[in-house]
Image 1 (cartoon, rainbow, N blue to C red):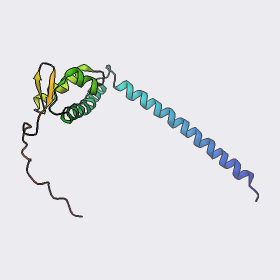
Image 2 (tube, rainbow, N blue to C red):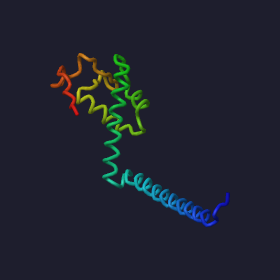
Image 3 (tube, rainbow, N blue to C red):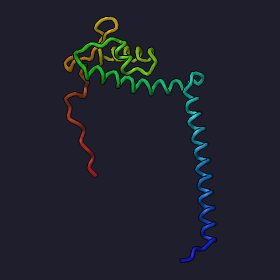
Length: 137
């Protein structure tokens, strides 16, 4: 079976072009990643607000999950911070304060926090209602 040398050269050239495109795309991706990291630094107010919002949402979930998983057990702030903290003590304190104000957790004494029991959680208007019907297609 004879191989056409022109076909081999053409395929080699296509491979070389594809490798060059990959290298260009990798370089662009690195620049985008660097720009993304820089946008979240303190000198960029929009990046700072966005990153704080993302951290607060996940931080809220982590704190609530930790306290509810161990309901009945009070946690010191330092225990919560070591377990769910991202190195930013102020954001953990702010999130805990918001959770207390929302009635999702309670402060037992200075620096100790606990999840609310099911009976203590505030009732919502929609509690006890059946779920909305699923659309039929």
